[in-house]
Image (tube, rainbow, N blue to C red; front, side):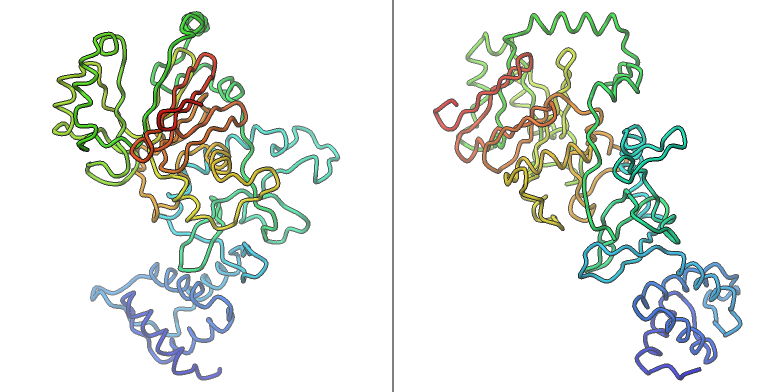
Length: 427
């Protein structure tokens, strides 16, 4: 057995000491020999070995001496490490172990499970009911990363790309090279609702067919109903300080309209995590006096307009998504960043598919950010330029920044008509 180098000895002693272990001479040599088996992934192999040693019984003194007799841990770590799938994300990157801890598993479980259920219903990704001869292009059945070991040929896998270490990106699924990366297929809203058997995601239980017909009839009579959306409005600015008085002076507007106030990323609140709670009462009391119909809601906010679902989200999303982009989006179909953003959030069925290190999320309320079933309309209050895009039957638009150039939008849900205003002009 070769004598480990001074650098290797120092590294092993430091790592073991951090975990509460002291290395004896024979154990040091055994550990060094173990690492030598994995020259391209020493750190991962060492972490796995330490995890196995943690399972060994310790004495009552807290710290534990490790000797060469801990062969069970070495064997288990070696076998476990060999079983870990390695998946290169780029051709110029080394293979990366697709492994994760329990906390990281929690991070991907919720969105992964929802999309997995949707994929299982897709005709291209579901397993054929009968044994039939099919080509690779006819069927794209999903294979778990753990099952890749020993497989040959082309396989389709679904996972989440995450950065667990600096400059190291991992492809994870719930089990453990990708030469083509793509989004999960988008499921039509009606197809999703048919699988949910009329379940109302607004908390109304199961909606009877008669109630759906009644709402549809009322919706047809609301042809002229309109949403006027102003984004990036600063109520504490001197220019908008008299907003309440201006609305109160117009009795018809005051009595027959509803006013939704959605907090933005820069507004006061207990934390920056999503979803954001309503604005603090001390900021809204004065406005509420002048506008009795003012409703202060969370961010994001969902509105049910008869049979339609409209989602409002106030966030500087385009800028943050582009900053966190790993692979530049293809420009074959479009080069418009807003259209790329719309495709991303709808296919991912999530308003903010960013790493938790970039945008924290309150996990108990993550469902508030989901876009499943797909809504009829998504309003993204973004600081970027005013944009509108209809994608797969979904109307999505950014009303622009009212604070920057007085831009806003007027939207009629019944007809899906959108009017955008920049300054004093209307388009």
